[in-house]
Image (cartoon, rainbow, N blue to C red):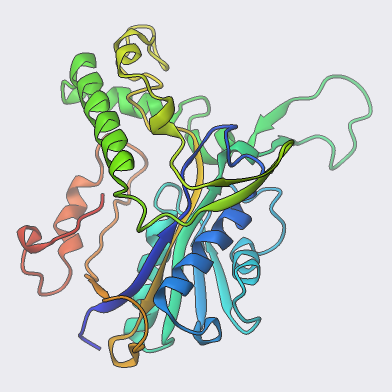
Length: 314
């Protein structure tokens, strides 16, 4: 098959802050909300979905087969083949790539792909108790750090340390990063205020002490104060440039796409988009901006050039 894969629909939950409004929901519950929203917006029978691929970096404590849980909770059929993907920050993207490859190969007609995470609910792990800790102190390991944010080959080095290296190598000043963070925050606030995100967000309901609350907005923009951003201390080194404000936030949320093979396109649903199949991924161990060698690869076979791409993601 040479035609691009058709994106029938997309949906995401609001993005929740760390220990914020979505902390009462597991990653699989968030994933289910996004999956259900994507299928409903596609206007197709959930029983027509053949597979689901969901990225999840922090699966500890979620139970068996997180992607299958998301499918079942979303009301998909028990026949659906479910795969949970862990490729660190690229997990959700890899899930989408795998879906496109499966559709291109003709091994499925409709696939839901996306990612889900509850960093808030990542548990602490104990290594001693499997064999029995009879006496003495024990150490707890943060699943979020150990399996998500920390270099597996040099313990203690977090993603932020690599960001600091990149900032030094490419001379990204603290001021430039703060200016970008402020502009990004202001754009997010403006977009939220204008309802620009409404078409992609699926509201979720959470239980509170006062009853139930419907969450329909990203939590971080409302909490951000542009005036405080330049005053924050560096997060990873004394003289560093990366802070809690100009770095990626620790968040909870999920997103999903409904993908279809062109010859099997359903007649219902919104005007579909098209997904370019060109992808590329760096292979070395983490180093600053290692995606650069793969930008050319991401154009795919017979690509027209990145200038012709309407959407790009690194």
